[in-house]
Image (cartoon, rainbow over all chains, first blue to last red):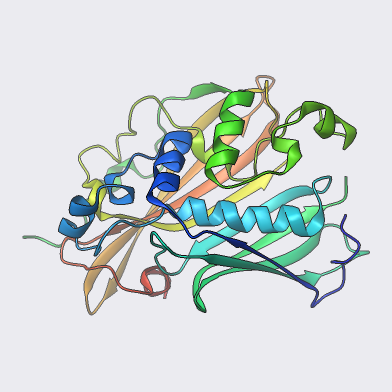
Length: 132
Length: 164
């Protein structure tokens, strides 16, 4: 467990991106989510989306990465939940912040996860982490 | 053009045919690379074991890759261009590791309709229950997908609106 992140109010942030079309294609292939709204621009426009959207689960993967970095690779994630609040697009830089809500010695530790693009919240979540 | 609910409510409570997955370290590597991860527990078995894991670890959102070989009945015939990510949750009993053989059951738990001034949308709540071959719980992945009404354009705050 990362000793720097144990008390309520402690925060830790990571940045991912800028997101590229190549990354969305890689994510489509690795995840099996081949919905064309994630890589076919004319299709996404035709569907009223204004262009390609990043997979919500890619943003959630960034949120999970933040939790793993924040609490250390030895800690076990027992629960992670997220709600997608706003679209993420190619070129966006996503910043994820973990904020401890319930700290040690409580086990699991609970933290909120917030992902933002230019200050706009794109994901809100919560993670529970247990000691190994 | 109609803007009514298109998801067959009669399918609520039904499950897709169960399917099995084998978790492969090459797949974990490709997934980790796609999400921009370099944490060594996803790539290096000796390192993962040094932290007490039984092998290479799958990232927390990896069960999103567990998909039945054919689309579940409640997805068939729907317009893929109208799906949006709503919510996802993962509850773990233990980490998923390379080499795991897992049983998966995907259920349509509920369908909720949300209305706004822009039209209607539906929330499709699906639960993927992942167990070991012995029947022990490994993970439950709740997948909430938004299905936009045909006339609903993407709102900047789509999910907040959908869940309000």
